[in-house]
Amino acid sequence: MRSEIENRLNEAKILHRQGRADLAAPVYEAILEEQPDHPEALHLSGVALLQSGDAAGAEAILVRAVDLAPENPKAVNNLGVALSRQGRHEEAAVRFERAIALDDCFTEAHFNLGQALQAQSRWAGAAASYQRAIELDPHHAGAHNNLGTVLLINGHFTRAAEIYRAATRLQPDLPEPLGNLVSALELMNRIDEATAVGERLAKLAPDMPAVRVLRARVARREGRFEDARDELLSVLTEAVKTGVRYPALHELALVLDRLGDYSGAFAAARDSNELQQTLPDAIRWEMNEIPAQIAKYRKWFTAERLASAPPAPSGGVGAPVFFVGFPRSGTTLMEQILASHPALVTTGENSPLSSLFTEAKEAIGRQAQWPEDLPALTSDETAVLRELFMEKARAVTGSDLSSQRLVDKMPMNIIHLGLINWMFPESKTVVAIRDPRDVCLSCYMQQFAHNVGMVQFLDLERTGRFYAEIMGLWLQYRNVLGIPWIEYRYEDLTGDFDGTVRRVLDFIGVDWDDSVQQYADHAQQRNITTPSYDSVTQAINRKAVGRWRNYERELAPILPILEPFVKEFGYEPG
Picture 1 (cartoon, rainbow, N blue to C red):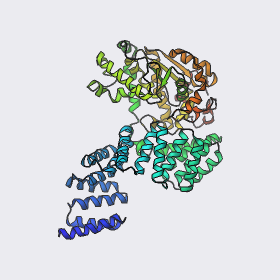
Picture 2: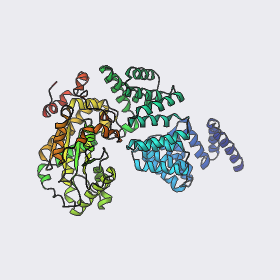
Picture 3: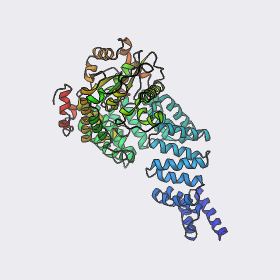
Picture 4: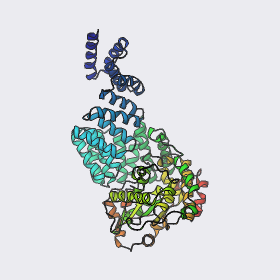
């Protein structure tokens, strides 16, 4: 009996390897009717279900296969694949790690682990997994492509472009690495090169919807707005997948805005945002997490409590400048200006402050909750955390900070100014302010990576409430912070560049340097990961000032929410 079953199984495996899973699957099922606990038949039946698109069904069978043969790395790996395809990336990563423990030379398990970690924004682990897959198989184009994407997301544009080029050499006929290379070059503002690679891509896959969207994006950057619009409208008339449709709609919103079709632009942005709200990597975030944190901070950080914070220890750590503001308040522009000053070095939204949330336990040897446990920190623990911050800052900036002042730029750190006041009482804070109506419009019409903060902007009314929550916290901080702070307005920067920049530099404590006037040239040499990457390499203009008036009717639901802040920050009412 066993010999006859094994013969049938082997014949089915041959069919499966030939791409005929549809013929192999019934054989596996027949074998399982006779021997329900046959590990290999279970495993291969699960693989067949995976290939048919039934990830949940595959999971149920592969769990049984792994229970019966826990030392089979392929079965464990495929169970991880079934979990990943259901969006359960954390569980999948555990399975991939187990498969690797069983066989460290299992290339696909390393590659799959990289994908699972990437889906969780665990960038360092994802990069390491892809690099290991490449070590095991230097011709693995997928690992090259995904490693390039991780590097690109984290601002390593030049290295990402190199990796994408390697992927295209490995598989010249594969559109995805070429498309990613176009994106990398466009992000680096190397438009001529992006156009050349885009032409190569267009020849390879002229009718591929994602390629056409990318082609439209390059056309927009070249100022060919009508061409971009026509290409996008053509794509959107087809039954394209959500993963292509929402970026196409976002791109269309940008193009229609430039063409003056404001109602059409807003409708396209709205449709893109509504589609994004259905994506697994948007749904997984808890919408109330940051509002709840803000409510806790508002209650905890009182003037009396901050006055009780310990003084800064002497020596060892410089006095950082924390540069914050609501997203899309023009912080990237000011950062490029400050970064061009020889006495300053900036973090490019890779804030070392995050280490106080992610690595505090390891650093001080015990769990700590902020802000509740701040008063319990010993002077030694505080010193360790401050040095952890500076260690991360040196790594991020590539500077030893002995001759340059650190500017930690991260807009959302505005929430954490109470914590900053406690941990760095010698620091200073620069706060970017922009017309709340322009800010919220820009946030709503911008395509961000999905995280716990940026998913707030997928809904217009939530965008308005989020602004009110964060900037309401700032208004409280104004009255209770012990550290010096200064506000500047984006509109003042674009209207009086020298006067506004001089005021900020004087506050920071560095002299004027003419290099700040050449910030656009300096920005061309930097990898800018924020959505403003294209505009900050150009001369300052005021076209974004008062942009909200083009969308006043569409913004009507949130204008009452924003009205108190319009008044507080000195803007003209509607």
